[in-house]
Length: 166
Image 1 (cartoon, one colour):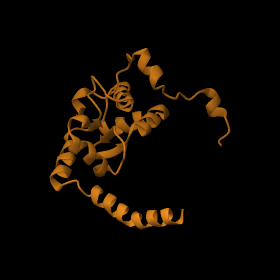
Image 2 (tube, one colour; image 1 turned 30 degrees about the horizontal axis):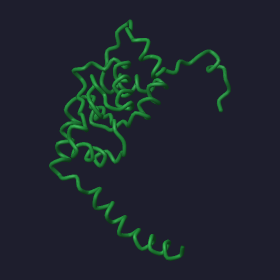
Image 3 (cartoon, rainbow, N blue to C red; image 1 turned 135 degrees about the vertical axis):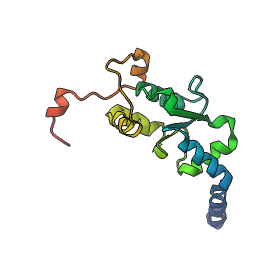
Image 4 (tube, helix red, strand yellow; image 1 turned 120 degrees about the vertical axis):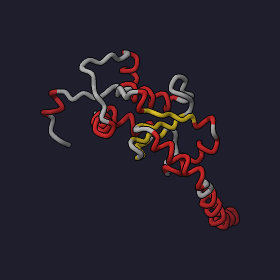
């Protein structure tokens, strides 16, 4: 057992160096391409699949949230990371975020699906997108009941307003 522990300890520095070197493999050309993509439109989503055919539940959730937020298609660019292995690994280094999908608004990284869902449910995403992308909200919304059930938005109730703060 001692030998196993000792050999693991001996491997750690070389393994860490390998990981560190691997994390720096994004070429300047790839970094420039990703930056240009991020700057292309006000809202940029790197996802698995396409908006019409997401290939992962988290990417599907991100697309649904943007739809529920009524982000106009002309303000959104999406990139299928499954079609480009360099983009798939490069976007993770670029943002220093380990998962896909990844959303950028006005050139700034917002987060992955978990962050988007949380911001959507709290109402923070609506405010953020409205201020950042200058979205014009129609007076009536036409949402699919199925979408609303998948990602319910938190609505403040009278009880919430009168409940003592935790």
